[in-house]
Amino acid sequence: QVQLVESGGGLVQAGGSLRLSCAASGRSFSSHVMGWFRQAPGKEREFVAAITWSTGISYYTDSVKGRFTISRDNAKNTVYRLMNSLKPEDTAVYYCGAKPILYGNYRSPVAYDYWGQGTQVTVSS
Image (cartoon, rainbow, N blue to C red; front, side, top):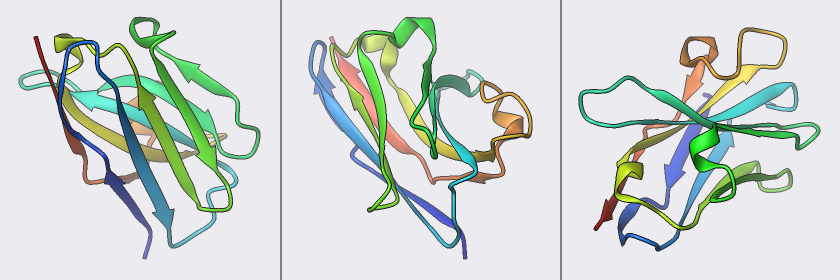
């Protein structure tokens, strides 16, 4: 059974930091891109960042460049998402997803065939 299990969300003050984890199991993700999305109340799920599991090449949306970092630990089959300098507008449920490298656009949630359960991040002002 394929699973992406997320952890690490919580409540933090503006300017603070959080690290989210996404533990993958049930199959090999070596030919996948691991994506990071977020969804605020009443809004669509939006792309935050992604990393290619095999090469470690990463991609970010402009609003988080320089503040967020996505990385992976192959030995632990886990993707990490470090969020620094958090802002109230970063408040959302954060999701990890997995998509085959050769299928679809990594910025589009419809390209992903596996999802974690999501974790709430709340940034207070």
